[in-house]
Length: 409
Image 1 (cartoon, helix red, strand yellow):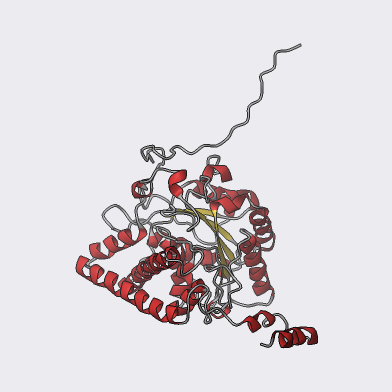
Image 2: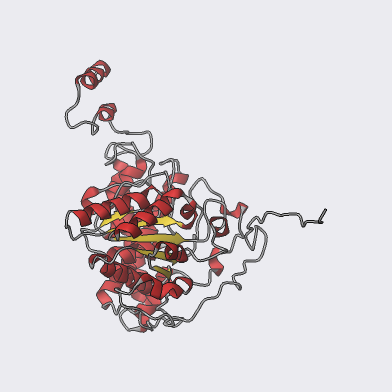
């Protein structure tokens, strides 16, 4: 008999654990401006190598360089900066509310604000968004009232979803924001289906969707990619690689084997990998993908390379699985600081203006929160019991009418 080598199973492990010194030295950060920008009509197989690179625009001095520079005017940049600051202030306020027992649950997007706000500015208002739970910036950018967002977080009498959803699972058809689902990955298939329907009807609206890198291990991700490829659906498929799922690092989802952008290659879908903390780069790749979709050239898969600076949610303690100071050492920095630096570099902003705007957005959030709390917080003034019978049928059937009458509501 032959002496055969015993098999062994490889279990991916993160580089650092709690107590270790954060070390990102193995991450290769290429200089900005070194990735070519192909025509949006390019064949997917001709740009396979871009899926393994990193599209960047802003350098360390805040200058915009290279072919992906979208050359945005200062007013658009300042609007993007304010929206990112507003989103962070909103997150901070709602996080404190959860710790005070005023709501049951919350999830922050700290460090990932550019991933939602830059695309929201690059897309048309009529385009449909199928988000995950860290894209609250989409709603704020599209003008959804912050008070309504807070009322939904508080599950009070003014909750637009009448207490039927988790606090952070917003929904607004009027603002092109599809209902967030706790079953991760569903939005990929839904976005592709919506985009296919839009194309089938001869509409001019496209779809965009967001999931985390961990969700790429779900079947919905591959099903969505397959349909998007076969039918050339006008959809932008965003994967937010923030390095961590709730407690497992991105290697568990296959991040050690290849980039997540490269997963589009096997489906014939262009894959772009972008610095997710570079507002200009995120805007540029979204603009490129949208142009491709509107010209009936099909879908684009975008990997946003970023970092989850906070816990997965208020139910999570990241200090149990990663070093405490890891977020501060992330080599791609903070999207707000980087855009601020760029605006100062071009002479369109100042530290004094930034400080004033910081105070202004905090005051805006404080005022909205005061109004939202006036309608109640968790358990103090919930939606009426009678609302449980509503919004299911166009015309309420007799047996539901009877049940409601029996409740006396």
